[in-house]
Amino acid sequence: MHAMPVRSSQDSGWLGSVRAAATRPWSNPPLLCCLALLIYAVAIGNAVRKLGQPNSTLGDFATFRDGAIALSRGQDIYSSGQSQYVYPPLIAFLYQPFSRLSMQTAGAADLVVNSLLALLTLALASAEMSRRFLGRSSLLSIARIAVVAALLTSDKIRAEFNM
Image (cartoon, rainbow, N blue to C red; front, side, top):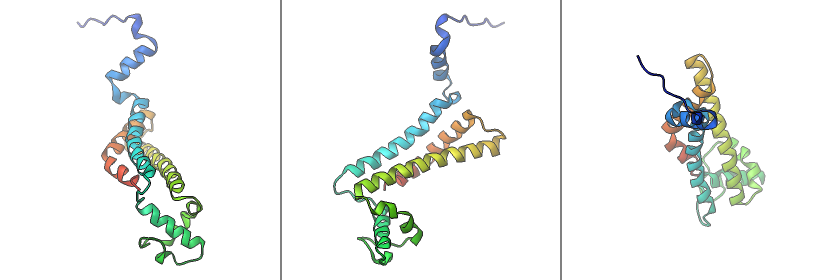
């Protein structure tokens, strides 16, 4: 027979919850959500650092913004800007609100919008995968799926926010 462990008064309350979470991290939804957010935070931090550099190129964002500026002026979007615009006109149309802002401000606003959309997509996709594959949608299963998805795609996440 196994002896039952003696519980002390220290194991009750919030301290007991913290100890339980530390011993079973895959059973703690807030901890898992924080881990997924940390993966995104590292990628977003790299993009913020790049935005702060005075002569940094903002990759495709600058091209999208140049196309949006040309579209708002009624010019040809495919011959605008420093680099060749080869994207569908819808992108230039959608980026028009950024054309009225400075490059740094527009880049920061774009980063905020993309970050929120990426996190929303991660949450919705994780919830749907949980519902379809597990037959239920608990916070724990959603958090587990979100962390695994964020870990498996961390290189893509960083590339997406690299601007």
